[in-house]
Image (cartoon, rainbow, N blue to C red):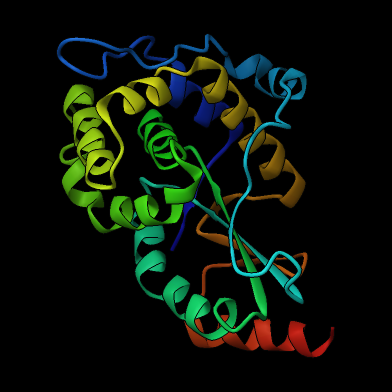
Length: 224
């Protein structure tokens, strides 16, 4: 099972609702004003060179694995707790795989979670782990944007981020635009239609059991 997406659906879900306040007293989510009709054109016009590529492992590892996942996708949370842990143990920590994590945005909540996780690049994978582990709790019913934002703030604080830093990250409209454009560009490049998806040695692979993923990775490594 996986969650599917289209650029139009993503853009409308992210920004169709306009400004949403992130706390009872201050701050609001960047309102990008992007429509589905001009999403691809807008993405092409945004400079994404400043977006930090988040990865684990050796930069020059023999094989690169790219994970595409959404913080609001239940299957991605399952993957984070199972297959991703085993890939890290068997291939990343042993120097065989460079594991790149790329966020996918089905909705504004996934974007907010990404902005929290990326608030301090050094803490990204630790915050990512917390967000997935507490996914059901911070999303709740999904009906109260203020509560969801505050739940994400609590996760950020647990990871050691200050209130001031969280405000800066969540209200950085330029960063939000760059992340959405970068996501769209990557999605098109690798023909991503759902999450979680992996690109293993340049080959797009849908979510599978660890045993099957392990076999694919080992085959790719043997061919190096």
